[in-house]
Image (cartoon, rainbow, N blue to C red; front, side, top):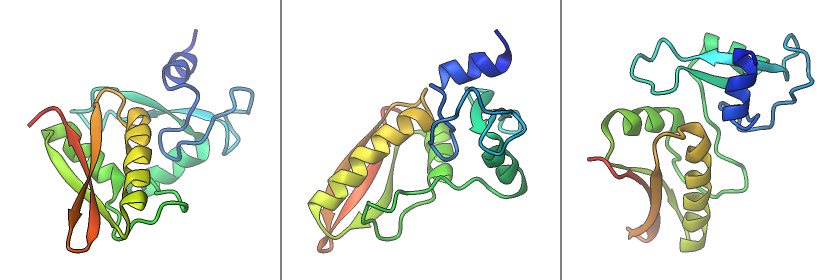
Length: 146
């Protein structure tokens, strides 16, 4: 097996940047094709390589990676998830990542975050909670480390 196959199998053939499926039969030269993203610049990263679409990998080389929030979630002032993941991976603890107008919206965001972080930073188990505050509901991510 090649490095690409090993990384892709471990990551479930999903792009770590956009969280969309990667087609193993697509050409590695196609923007939607598979590529291995080396995270060697981040010396503290526990996983050195991640699977990414060729286009996602190329784009993130030119600018800081942006992990998008889905349009169906109603989150006010959503935190930049790549930066949140890096801080939680480095320090642990908890971090408020957004505000929502209703508890239902906040719970939907919390559920999505736990699922997304399970693929974004698989070695870092997180929990997400909803806390009332100022007439809104805060979405808080936490790790077991402090």
